[in-house]
Image (cartoon, rainbow, N blue to C red; front, top):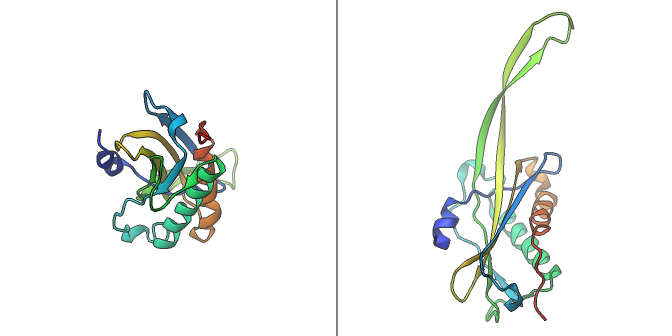
Length: 177
């Protein structure tokens, strides 16, 4: 499967501090992670989603890039913008989905009553997917995801940092020295 296909199928968003975050990862087969020393962050340039601009915007994409860079450097990888000598590319794509669930509630006035009421709960749900791609051959070597209900967009930096850190907690490889 090509990187473009994987990216197009990817849904990305940001997790919240109070909602549970589902984190998964997948490692490519026959990958020698000992060959990688440097990285470059590459953003897949999709248009911003106009219905989710409070989450998907230039500021938040820059926060994601900074969090990615921080986590990769923490793992010992050197950032190389112009001429990366190893071939790890970090990319992401942002889309946020609107969800509605029906919430059932018992009457608070009479515990013996069987009165129930239902109301719709509207919320936004996001998934952040990070791809590490071997720059020399374009092959996906590792992918990590974090999914959650989205919180207040005013807490974006904290939320993004937490989501990216949780994803990279699944990444068990350090840079070769």
